[in-house]
Length: 217
Image (cartoon, rainbow, N blue to C red):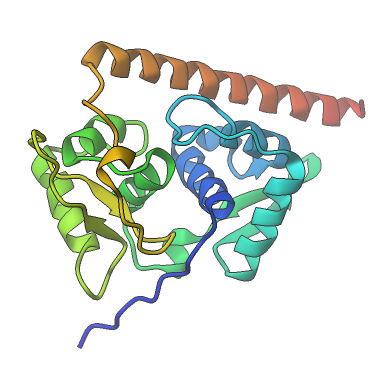
């Protein structure tokens, strides 16, 4: 008999911090685990995030402390830099594989998504072979024994159903709260370019922080 997984109910701040650590572990592995500065910047980035937030360092620290008590993140030190760095333990706490982590991460950071949107937006974290593979992962994550996500009711005029994560508890989406028509491909491409620029900025910032620490500045 399969063991049913009991999910923690996380706050919006905890979800954003956890989601960012999950994302950056794949998209910028050279700068992972993350420093407090880079983590705060990534939480507040304006692309690939819904909603866009403006967290201060205290907010991020509070979320990290809470996540650490729940075993979902841990700290790491080492190398020439003494600054504390942070990493997620999601795949250690829960029996999930990289494809499943990518799906959950996208739903945490971007809100409800269709299988097609997940397939389009997951490339930097995990390359799905097809939309059928995405749907297979969503079906597994929706099973009663692994209730990480749930399917939302299909809206009128919408071809694909959307899925949401359940790490923030059950949330009912009213019609007016759901996104409007899917963004055009050109907008998606622009968002991807902005996300890459922000990732490059984070990498440069991390390298500069490292250099300043080594120089004792």
